[in-house]
Each structure stands twice: as C-alpha cells, then as structure tokens.
Image (cartoon, rainbow, N blue to C red; front, side, top):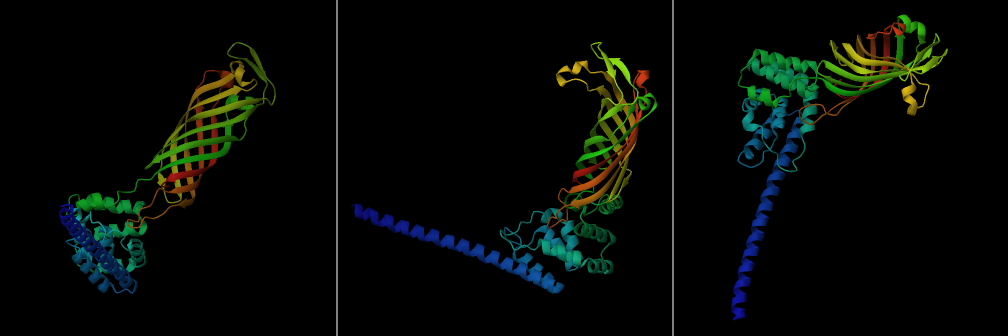
Length: 387
C-alpha cells in the first residue's frame, strides 16, 4: 500500500522539479540573451561613433530602442538618448524626447549594461563645433535651437557657471509657457547659485586712533573665521586676538576695586569677536569682492593673574563695536569631479587667499581709552562648495 502511494508522489515531484528547472532555464536564457544583445548593440554604437559613422550610430540607436520598446528595461537611459541625438545631429529626435519628458524620464537600463555615458559626453565635447555648426543649418524652430544650446552648454561646461544661468534665465523670460516646460523645470539643472562654507586662518595688523593710539602699541594679530556664502550674500563669524604693549604707564581699578598698575611694555590682551555681513558685487572664477558691515564686541583686558583669579583683572574696554569694510578673495586652486551624464560638478573644494580691510568704531564712555581701530587681515581659505 505504501509503495502504491509513494510511486505517484515521486512521479509528481519529478514532474514538478523538471517543470521548475525548465522555467528557470527559460528565464535565464531570456534574460541573458536580451541583455547580451543590447550590450553588443551599445558597444557597436560606440564603435560607430568612434569611426564618425554617425548615420550607422543613429540606425543602431533606433533599432535598439524599437527592440526594447515593449520590454521592462530600455536600451538607453534618457540622457544617453539625448546625447546620442546630439552626436548624430538628430535634433528633431532630441526635441521629441524633450517635449515628452514625462514619458521618457524614467527609462531604466538593463542591469550590468555596457557603460557608454562617459564616452558620449567626451565625444560631445570633442565634436561640439560640428554639433553647433549642424544646429545652425537645421530648419527646426528657434525655440528648439535654444533648448539644444542650453543643454549642450551644460553637458560641455557644466551648469554651475554664470553663462548657463544667463542662458536659462533668458529662455524662461522669452518662453514662460512652452511645450518644453516640463523638461526645463525638471530635466535641466537649476540656475547657478554660488554657495560655500569655508574656514579662514591668518594674520594681520590693527591700528588705533586717539587716546588708544597714545597708550598702546599694537602687534600682529591671529584671526580665524567660519564663512558662509549663499549666492551673493555672505556672513563671516570671526575672532581676532593679540597682545598690545603699554606705551604710556597708567593705573586703574579692577572689578573688586583693587589698584592695578600698568608699566611700560606690559602686555594687554586684545580680543574681538563678531560677524561680517556682506554682499559680493564682483564675482568671477578667480576673484570675489564684497563690501560688508561689521558687528562685534571688542575687549582690552590685563593678563596679570592666573585664570582662577580672573576677577582681579582690569577690564579697560569691553564694548560693542560696529564698522564697515571690504573683503577680497583670490582663488588659488579648486578640485572637483564630473558626473557621467549632466556634466554637473560635485561639491567642490577650493583654496583661496582672503583679504579683509575695515574701520571700526568702539562704542564707549571712558575718555581715557577713547579711540577707534582699523585693520587689515590676510588669511588662507579652505572652502567647500562653489567659489
């Protein structure tokens, strides 16, 4: 009885295992053959472009697109399609894909597809003059030519430059509502808005006026700051410190009314901390210039005692300070890496020289230490973001 039951069960298991194996092989065969076919086509397309056989490259692109039209994956990524259209001067095909951005934007490549993005971008860069020449000769409408020109610029030069921003801004002004609006709003990078975060370390000099000048001689200062720029507006949180020397001996009283004498050449601690708020009026790839206002606190204090006896120190000045100045930045070097498709830049690192000069008014009531200050600081800037 057991044998009679076991035999049909074994037979059914054998049937189903064979069926599963057959399905598995069919799936593997289908997947491997389609992927391999598309990859071979992508390789042939690149070979044709390298030989400058753009007509053949166009035919390969069209054939592979049709071949994968009813499949889950596409032969080309959306931006690859645009770049192929540029290289083959298929400007009508380019604009059709731009106009139907929502239809094509989510195209997904087959897994492990042969990489062609970098090659296409390099070829566009090398053939940019030919592409522009063919674009001028084509009979498509002027609006379409301007879209292609904007896209071509950002592929070659990147989007984070003033020229790209100008092209995009002018296009949107001339064509506020257009059949290409979806692509312009979602498919193109936004206009360039420079932004960075930096650290600045350096030195400089400070000068005094009136009674402060008569009482103290100044010294080189240490300065450091954290700077933030968004578009043309910047803020710099900074501190400066040094020791002044007594030129004219004097005495005073500490906070607990103890007499404090200051001898010739005795050190006084100078400390200033605050914020610069400014606006870049000149913005180029190598030089930035910005006037600013300064809001800060300035202190002059004796340093006769140990930190545990700080309450015995004599505070000469501890007052709100305000003034104006200007900042100039000169780029020394910049490091970045390009992405394969858009030509967009990763967050940059840059080194620069920064020069701050300004004049500050010390708000105070003590006539003995009446006076203001002026300064010039220079520093090395280490920045993250667009210069």
